[in-house]
Length: 273
Image 1 (tube, rainbow, N blue to C red):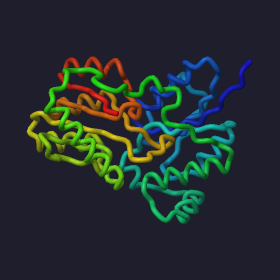
Image 2: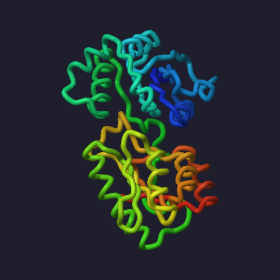
Image 3: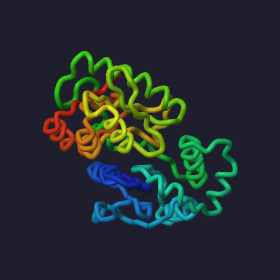
Image 4: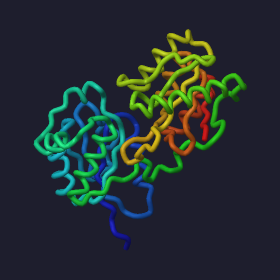
């Protein structure tokens, strides 16, 4: 009998955590799944009946989380789902987190998550890529669903790609909204959906293109661009008619629902190389 993989799930909000758990349960080998849930973030009800253990934490309780994982025999961990900005500002670090933060020269997302990975590794826990068991959900190159793009729209996709790569390199944001060669909005701390709404208002709901990219040299253990059904609904409501993402570097969650919504709302979804 194949050995059980013992995985700790660091679960934020949205559909991402349950998507991972379902994918893990479809594997041919056994998995024990122990979930580190966050107050006001993790949807415990969606995970009911599919996991082996769950404990609640506040953001910043790294020492407590690692102790929970060790008690459960966890040897691998994965980060799935985001944490709302309001909870990031309500950070209540324990001693292990304080010591970790004191060693950091910079406190951006990459350095913080990298430090968390190092702390996990000290206790024999390997951080897995955020795409683990979900590789079939990565966006394929080209037109994916919704109306076919016109040449003008492809020009905006290429322009948005160039801008988004630069803003992500500067650690500002990985999403931009453009229209006819003009940048309408750049994602910042407010998140993708708020950026979409702001850019849609400025574009007056006419031929607006959203482009989402990965950071140059992005570590896919910590973060990967994600498109879900809510993204398409937000775009449709804001007048965004094209969603463009990086092929092979973007997860399409609730894939069937995305296809239905793109057809219904006449939103084009494409992926570039």
